[in-house]
Every structure is written in structure tokens, then in C-alpha cells.
Amino acid sequence: MANEKIILTGDRPTGKLHVGHYVGSLRRRVELQNSGKFDKIFIMIADAQALTDNADNPEKIRQNIIEVALDYLSCGIDPTKSNIFIQSHVAELCELSFYYMNLVTVSRLQRNPTVKSEIQMRNFETSIPVGFFTYPISQAADITAFKATTVPVGEDQLPMLEQTKEIVRKFNSVYDDVLIEPEILLPDNKACLRLPGTDGKAKMSKSLGNCIYLSDTEKDVKTKIMSMYTDPNHIRIEDPGQVEGNTVFTYLDAFCKPGHFEEYLPEYANLQELKDHYSRGGLGDVKVKKFLNNVLQEELNPIRARRKEYEKDIPEIYNILKKGSEVAREKAAQTLAEVKAAMKINYFEDAELIKEQAEKYGQN
Ligand code: TRP
Image (cartoon, rainbow, N blue to C red; front, top):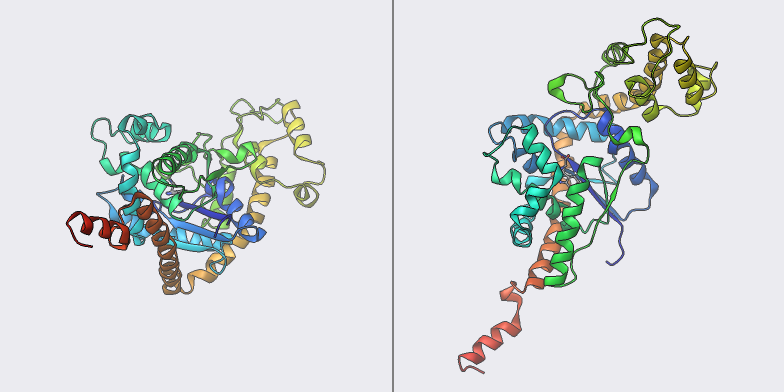
């Protein structure tokens, strides 16, 4: 159907999802799902992509698929409205990637900023796995297979979307107008674009131990907040404090809603007043941290409660993923058929070709 509005997005199952994933994309996906504005929603657990830099540790991926699925469901992704599926179980995606590879140059892949920085981060240097190097192409297959119009992801995925659009334009101009150019949907709040770790470091990462996970207990979350990085020069309460680069305030920017002050900190009208007081001096870190704890727990409590329910029937979660993968496969197969027809490599369905060749050999 033309003009359908379709969402495709996903995550690599290399660990549990954290609050950075939540404000960066998950929260938005749930809103979009419940807006009723989309005809179809596909949410993919990108296990095949996760394997591109974890070839020696498939067990890690195997263990984390259920974690990511539980995180999705507990955030409010509703399997009756959104189709959750597993990338490796949609074989058509590989076939699409194989054809798209011919439309992309090695030097273009080398210039992809996300690939570049990931190569550095992983110390691949000269031993870059080919599968890893080409994953932007496979990601273009993920997006185009579902004719996605909208891709809600974090900022780090911008270069992937750029590359996807280029492949779409190239395919459509070389062959036929089959593929849809997707639009990226980034968080509208700056703090949500890249939520720092609890230690103030730019990136949350499991190995740094600076993440707040969606599945953390109330107690763990509180401990992590109370030891969060703030302004190292704000030693006594009377000292003026720095708000910029202060993790506690960045988290408040990402999570605080107007009603929170009335409920937990009525002596301030809004976040700006709290920030002004902190900058002037006379406001202690503990008070701000306790407020953040209230705000964050309020957001995480319903997520934890839903998780508890879903955890009661794990085989059913695998069932949801299996059914979701079947639905995804149908859609991807349809696109693949259109792609092959546009490339005219659907020989057996091409009566004209068969007739033409027969005539060439003197048969009428
Ligand atoms: N690259 C994404 C991540 O690292 C996962 C992903 C794979 C994805 N294919 C996608 C996201 C397609 C959006 C669209 O989490």
C-alpha cells in the first residue's frame, strides 16, 4: 500500500538496556506506538549485527535476546501493536544486503563516522571483520525491507540513516522506484541525545560500570544516584556550583516533568529555579540527588512492575518473538520480490524473457 507510515527500529542484544536507551529512543517508541499514527511498527533485536563484532562470543548474544525483549515489553512496547522480531530469523535481509553491497564503495564505508569510531573503540585497526565493516549496508537492508518511513533511534545512528538514504536513491535510480527513503527521528531534548554515565563520562558502558539499567532494583538505582558525579569543585553547600556538565542536572533535564516539583520539591517552581540556586550556592548535592532519585524511581517503578509480570512466563516471550519474526519475514519477502523484479533477476516469473530467448533459438 502506498503512503503507509511504517516504523522500523532496533537494538543490538549485547546487554541489558539502560536509561540512556530509554530517553534516547525507547520512551519515544512507546509514544509513537500509542499515538495510533503508524500503520505498522517493527522492532528488531539485531542479533546478526551484534555478531559482527562478537563472532567469538555468540553466547553473549544468545543470553541477551530475552533481556532486550523483556526491557522492550516492560517499557510498554505492546506486542499486539508492535511487531518484535529477531534479525537472524529474517533471511531475506541477507539477500537484500548482498545486492545492496554492489551499490556502495569501500571508501564510502570507510568514511562512515560511526564505523570509524567503532573501529577505533574496538582496536580493530587492520583486522576489521568484513561483516562488521559492511554492517551499515545490512542496516540499510533492515530499514528498507520493511519500507520504513520513520526510524526512531539515538544520535549515533545518524550516519547509518545517511548511508541508507544513499542506497535507496542509488537503487531507485539504477533499477526502479521500489525503496522508500526513511526519516530519522531523534529525541527533541538535548540531554536525551546522549545521556552520560553516572560517572560523568560521555558514554554509558557496561565495562565502565556507569549505567543505570531499566531492570535495576530500586535500591541499586538509589545507590547509583547518590554516588553520581556532580561538580567536583562544589565542596561546601555554600559554594557556587556548576550546572553545566553536572550529571545530576543532565539527568534532571532528561527526566524531570513540571509536576515533579509540586510533588517532591515544592519550594522550587521549576528546574530553572533549582539550577539558579545551585549556581548561586547554598544548595547541597544530596538534596538534588534525592530529588532525582524520586523522579527516576517514579519513571522506573511501572517498568519494573511490568517486567515482573512478563518474567513469569519466559517461554511465552520466545513465542512472541517467533510469531513476530514470521510476520516480519512476510513483509521482507514481499520487498525482496519487488527488488528482484526491479533488477530483473526474477527469471522464472519473467515470461517475456523466456519467450525472447526461445525466439532467439528459433522457437515460436
Ligand atoms: N545499529 C543499531 C544499534 O547499534 C541496531 C540496528 C540494527 C538498527 N539495524 C537497525 C537500528 C535498523 C535502527 C534501524 O543499536
